[in-house]
Length: 215
Image 1: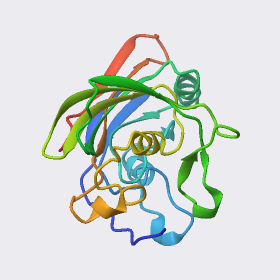
Image 2 (image 1 turned 60 degrees about the vertical axis):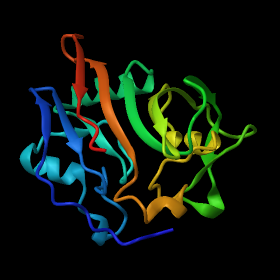
Image 3 (image 1 turned 90 degrees about the vertical axis):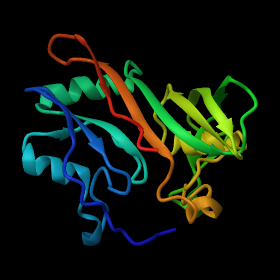
């Protein structure tokens, strides 16, 4: 299940910064945090901390997903932001291109997920032992054998959107784990974290960080 790691050399794309919050546009193909071996040390967190030594991790995106990632600039901000993710205060919007033409205009996916131990890091649906996972989706357009969806996860399970789209019968195009048959036909996995809405950890002001979907 491993493949060579050749992270992109894109310069840091800072979306927002103040003394408490940093928002960055993560490129596809770059780990959010370091892997277990030295060859997987390069990651967004390490790159961010070169420019912002005080930046602290709040959440993650999969290596092959691009888009908005938020960091805390103080320990208090990190705790506050992490709690917003944990309590589902944060509103997340993703865009995905998926295989097949989705007939319905919108829908909900309520399928519990758990790691597929013999096939790690894959996740799977399991109604007995899985953790609750809920995704809302809206079809943006479809044609030529594929569809473009806006995905709004209400939980933050590992690989949630990838497995939920697969469970619909419409896997995300270019996904090396859940749609490997499409991976050679696309330059990357077609999943992008387009927008995050949260409250500022100091003044509770509503904030929105957004970055254009690159596909």
